[in-house]
Image (tube, rainbow, N blue to C red):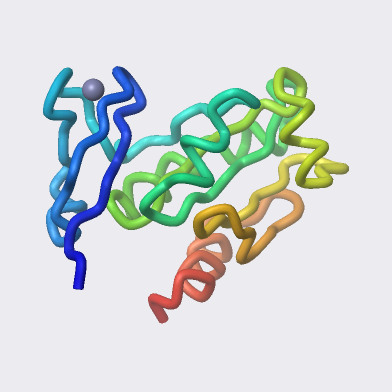
Length: 147
Ligand SMILES: [Zn+2]
């Protein structure tokens, strides 16, 4: 059984090997000391989506959003809470659909906010529109098999 995973640093690109049971301990990059699994939402773009989402060692909740969308802005604090609560188990990534139309089109985003849960390159759950935090968390837990 392989108990280590590889995580590439979002800051410097260095690949770090981590013990699986240490993933909740806020691990840092061996080269630049930036956090490897931050407990806050991070941005992805068309250029970084494959690395930050599809190659992630932990499942990823992607928020497809835009700054002019007020329900999207309302989801902001909820996503921050979720990123903190699931630190080390789930990554929260925000993708601005106006700036990154290729990825938005690839996943058929018609309306925002749209939330998709990824396990590797696979979408395992999708939520359209803004939802309360407890609804989002129960969908996350069900999708990830925690409950
Ligand atoms: Zn680094």
